Image 1 (tube, rainbow, N blue to C red):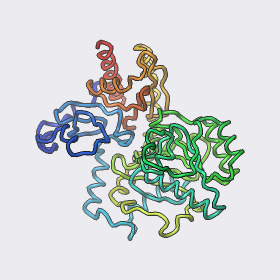
Image 2: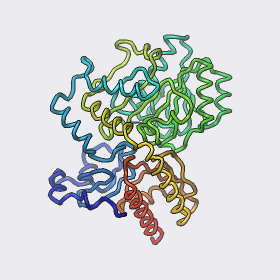
Image 3: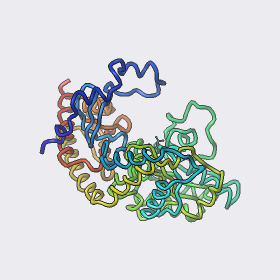
Image 4: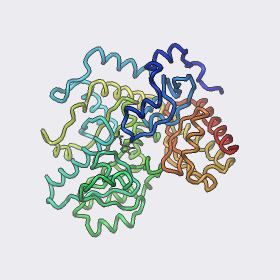
Length: 425
Ligand SMILES: *Cc1c(COP(=O)(O)O)cnc(C)c1O
């Protein structure tokens, strides 16, 4: 089946009307932006569904979805409609007032998950920051003041605020900023013995264990069911809170709304962001009544958290994801994609394995392509396919979960062409 690209191809007037004039180029970025990013050459002009067009009119199939954010693709008409509707009413009131979209979204999240209470913020790092502060405060309120230890895992990623980056397990992101927050221990991921050993020695000092059910930035490494269950057991025995960071894995990407549903446990705190607003910035921390008591009036806050525009969109995202057969389709699409990627990986001696869940997949490069994930990404871009990397040896794919079967096939064909060109150079 041919891709849907031509149907959505914008006219050149649309492209030029949406770019900000010919004086802006990729070089302008470097003149006015801090140099902490190194964005691609192309500048997007318009996007729709799983497709994106740059200011030159070139089309790209989007298997990156803005780093696992645009779960329903770009400019979903239902999301555009509710956003426009709310924009006519009011945009922002702060937490000096509550608002109906925020309350509705919290209700929905409580109905769909283990949660009884919800805190809203704007990004993954912010809700993880809130979760860590809550765990420390809960221990402070209920136990003794020595119960402050945070257990996290090597290669984990929890955001870029100083607290969250320190809890993350990649020193390259947290070194070089002076003294780090104290009381954080990193253990090897999926190592049940190391975890039991640590709890046997210092369990009573642990206030929380924080992990991603699938490490995203760290290479698309799923936590084993046993590992997650042992964490749950250790936390129960030692009055420690289990914090699941589902910022990347949540909102349907795995074929479930949240991955914990597959693992036979419920966390004490869950954080969700990226996909929640389908591209509009919003994040939520979910927890129970009992734990939420430690966030009394004034203990924590956010100016933009619970913004009605963001909450309106997130309500619609959750409705579209949960009140359709989208989640079952994720499993079918995933099966097909894994099968085809594995075949392509073998044919081209490109991948040694494909892992992950649903539509969050990591393809490990074979020895022949060792350390060349950037080259593969660049070659794919040139063929009009956007992918992600997770380190030097993993190609990460996170397409919109409503991507069509035809678009998946088109993306695979583009990837194969990209590899053939790379082989020829
Ligand atoms: C992206 C990500 C974060 C950080 O989210 P931001 O919105 O960039 O602050 C935290 N945790 C995980 C697992 C992530 O993938």
